[in-house]
Length: 414
Ligand SMILES: [Mn+2]
Image (cartoon, rainbow, N blue to C red; front, side, top):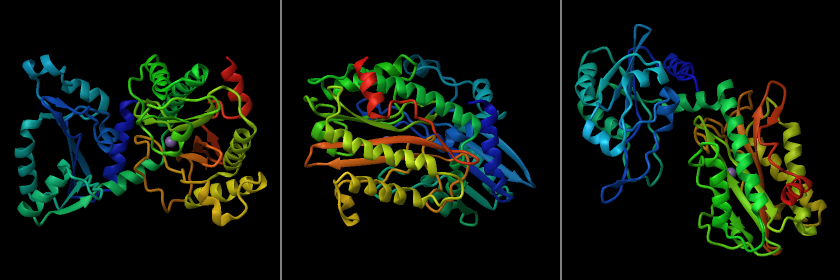
């Protein structure tokens, strides 16, 4: 992404922030795993959306006063010994070229600067990215700061910046669509590699290895989210991560995977017979999914309430299953359809956006995911694609990843 993207995101945020306010965002801290080892660091998505910087312990401070905005990044200072062990730290000039923030200080100075700012009398509101989930056991730095503010500066109002960011992130910019298209190409390479190596007797971890290898050949060292790859009965676990099962002749392989490119994450599901040839029953169910998916891509356009998407998928897919003689009554559709799937994608695979009550608009990107689970027949799979809403309709960003019985069988023949 060009630096302009991040700069414009900050401008759009600060436009919606009241005057005499500060906004503070933290990239986050590494979390200790065990001994002297940390979990892989994953920077706060809103921080990255505003800066493009992914280094831990980095802080963005913005202040809006008299209509003008000051911005500063606090970064880890150079430390030769630390960098010898854990790698080099970003330099101010590098962070500047990524983010277009022009003012820098060392993180060590953050606390003193913050106290000065809060005591200056210029600030009436402090905007923080507060996103608490039920049961969450680790306080974020924003949570800690909010608690400290309540004690030390009770007259300054704590405001949540998250709803504004969720609104901004809902509509994708052209550069985001480009990154998504690139991510789809790489996802396609990964899925095709799994299809082409597929054979009875293959273990789920071997499918996963094919997917990861194909991504790595494109410079993508980690998928956008933990891959779901399962065979046969394991397909009846929706979020399955064991990779230990073996595909037996006649089994369906299910994948739910996505590459990430320039922070943009795809999310695509395909199901195929491990032996490369659909049985009559597998084909019957697959074609119900496919027809439902095609219907959705033909009808989706701006103006439709977002909450109607899942409902329409459910209703239309029921009609297909009814015609196929699988499900007679709509009340029983839950036996075969276990989940919806119209979640947005972007910087997160389940993107943090204000979508629930949204009306579909150009620039939204969300999944069209149709899952069918027929336990009696031992067939469970989903067909999931990524839908970009355009001015007058929509576009399937993942349409080139084989998605018909014919295409899948052709690819698997090699
Ligand atoms: Mn998915």
